[in-house]
Length: 434
Figure 1 (cartoon, rainbow, N blue to C red):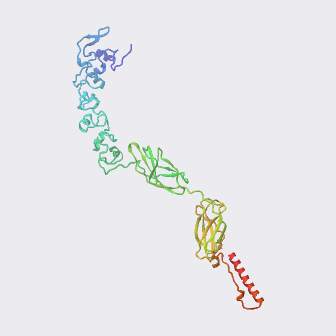
Figure 2: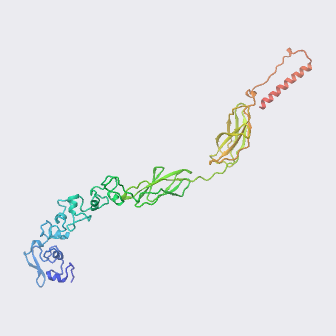
Figure 3: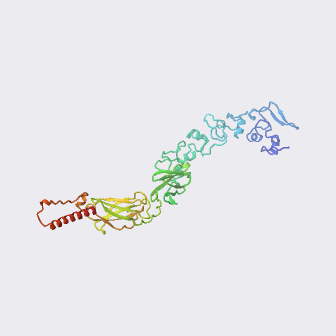
C-alpha cells in the first residue's frame, strides 16, 4: 500500500476519521490537512458526508453535507470561496486573514483597488509599508517595493521624507537613492552626492612614440564604458580603461581626460586633464660643408652665387648665406631652400647695394633639427668694374685727319699713329676682360 503524506499522522487520521490513503478524504478539492487547520470538516464535501463502513470508504450521509465545508463554501462571507482560499493559503474562517484591513477576496482579485496582493501578508512587497497604507495613503504599488524605481524602498522613502512616486524628490537631477547612498540630502536641491567613483586622477601614459601613445584611466567602480577626450574634444570609447591613440605628430603636446558610464549611476564627472608630449624623431646628422661655392658678378648690378649640396644631404635641409665687406665681417643675408635633386646646382642672385664694391660671401647648410654644418670657404666678387661695363659694345675710336696735321717729320707721324693704335688695342682688351 502506498502511504499518503498529507501532513496528518495516522493517529490524527484515526481521530478525525479521515482516510489515511487519501490526501482529500471527501474528494472536495480541499486537502484534509488544510480543512482541519481552518475549521472545515475533511469528511464533508459540502453536499455529502463520507466515512468508513468497515469495508470501504463511501458516502455515508448523502445530502447531509454543509456547503460551508465544500469548495464553494464561504464561511467567512468575504466573497472568496474555500477553493480559492486554499489556493491562497488564507483562512476561510477569517475575512481578513492578514489583518491589513483589506478583505481576502479584495486581495485575491484586482477588485476595487486594482491590485492583487497576498491575503496572508500585511506587506506583500516587504517594503515596510502595509498594503492598505500603500494603496490608500501613498498611492504606491503594494507589489513593488520601489514604486518610483529610484533605489529607495517605499518604506525608506517614508523614513527620509521623500515622495514614493518621484525618483528625484528635490529636482537636483540625482535620484533619491543615489543621494542617500552617497551622503547627500534627497530633500534639498543644494545637497548633491559625492560619488566615490567620480574620477579624481588624471590619465597616465605609456608606450610614448613619435605618433602614438597608450592612455590609461584609473579604474572606476561600476564602470561599463570609458570615454576619452583629446584636446577638449571627444576622441574614442573603450570597454576597458586603456586607450591606444595613434596618428599624432612627433614632438607635440596633447591633453587628455576621460569620463565613465557607470550603469545605474549614470555618467561620471570629467576627470582632471593631463598632458603628454610625443617622442622626437631620430636625430639627423650634422650637415657636411657645402660644395663648390662660387660668386660671379654680372658686370652690371648683381652677383650670382653657385653651390652644390653637402654629400650627406637629406631632404628638407636648407641653406643660410652670409655677406660682408670683408671675409671676417660676414653677417646673415638670406635663407634658401634646396631646389631639385641631390645633383642639382643651387644658385642665388644677390643685388648688393654698391655695384663696384667687392663683397665677401660664405654659406652653410642646416638640417631639419636646426643644426648647422660648417661654413664654406669665403668667396668674393663685385657686380661691376666701372662705367665701361655699362656699354658692352663700347669701342674707342680715334680719328686722325692727316690733312689737318702740321708738317712734321715722317718719323714723328708714324710714332704718333703707333701710340694711338696701341692705346686702342689696350682699351679693347680691358673691355673684354672686365
